Image (cartoon, rainbow, N blue to C red; front, side, top):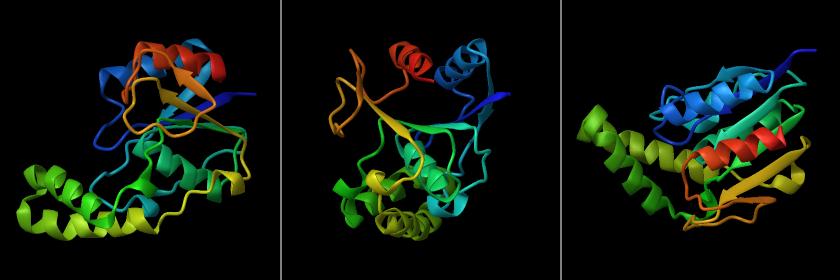
Length: 175
């Protein structure tokens, strides 16, 4: 049986970044068929759920872990790895709206950034994460040096909120 894994990068990132290319290569070396998912970070995350195979593993980093949660909620799979899952419940609507507007403005312009920032913040605030209710087995990881540490099954030493070589090695051991 083919071993399949999906990689969902963090907010504003895509799988063309060197760190995700390294992750994909490491997982391919471990015998996995790697499917890289590049979310449209300018659109609501809840509308980007995609179908996956029951025997697939899903790996999401930061905001990508939020999308991984939504996917696994709708399409149970073999396992989900939540890497540095963004603690969305800790952010206020206003904080999210401000951050999204700031990050979107250079790409889409101020007028569209204002509308889209509000839409994205509303979408995130409507997402309710309850790992206890998830039907799919999961593992949580967090970097030792992260500012907003969520409870985790594994702590990646000497790592902050970024996909590093240490993170990649830890993930390789867990798949």
